[in-house]
Amino acid sequence: MIIPSGPATAASFTDDTSADTRNTKKRHVSIHAKVRRETPLEWYYNLLSLCKQEKGELKSNKVLIAYRNMPPERRVKLWDTLKAVQVNITDALPYQEETNKQLKQALKREDAVDYIRHRASANDPAAKKMLELLNNSTAERILLDAPSRMLAFHSYYARNRGGYGLARAIHIDGFGPPPPDHRIPLSRFKSSHQSIVRTVTEWTSKSASVFSDAMDSISYAGVYESHPLLDPVFRALRKSHAFDRGNKKLVDLTDDERTEVARSMRYHEFWLKEYPFSPLQEDVDSRKSFYIQASDIAGGIAKQLYENGGIFTVTQNFEYVIFNGRRISQNEAYETTKKWQELGYYN
Image (cartoon, rainbow, N blue to C red; front, side, top):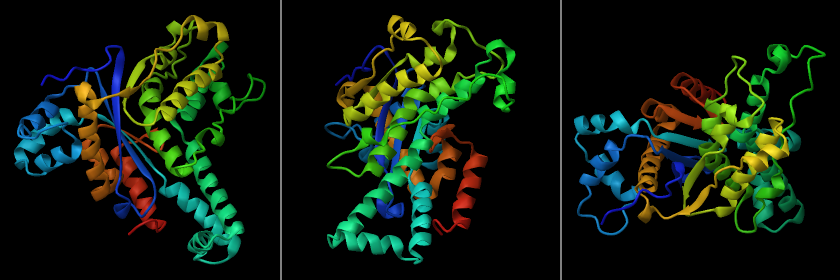
């Protein structure tokens, strides 16, 4: 059966997976793989050739078996093109640990988190309220590093109106207004069937596929034009992106965020109506898009790498990795891993 490419207007295709909590200290980790339309797919066809006997939809768990059994030299060759896939990871661990640290200090006991959870499980109203506040605090910390918020902040300082961009960046008084406080309301992520920390973790990872190209388009060389179509950041934001079937609400939230970021760039409402964003495709069936299928497989491989070796191992294999809202290098991933070990997050 020949699988089509998917939506013709989409610049990229993203699918998600979640790390096994048994391997991630029982916190929420969301992993998305983004395959750009121009990304070479030799790795994908190579893996398909090893799974010819598989029937039905080819998912990452089936391909991982073939990947693990590949001869070492063939696996190395696979990474010549697989490394070009973008991987977005949000790990709630540092945000969760910071919240837990404050709770321990407030209650003056090391087992404060377990104590509150135990009391909440016993239907203690005060403990249930405290647990809700703890989860909200963790979610708010994650949103402070959301890709859209990072984009709004950095694009503001890159815009050199009248030649005072550098002065504004170093906070010289009298050179224009302060940056807008781009807040993402926590209420938008409330759900009756899922933890707010899980929802926010998934959204920040998923939305990175939309905002990463715009982040890469920011220039601090004084590039700015008043017309939005001459602004590389605005042009990048206007692109269409496709997502596998899943949480339509999170894709809609991402769409709303594109408009909010554009407003923070001081574009008049006229421009936003005159040059609307290309729609996000939020319900693409992987059986009808080989790009989505490829992103699912790449996400499965990234998940295995993260569970076994953490963020450093992922950056050793993939060239473009966004971690907790920011693109991260191998050196930065190594330093992050070392810091987390020193802080006692894991052994």
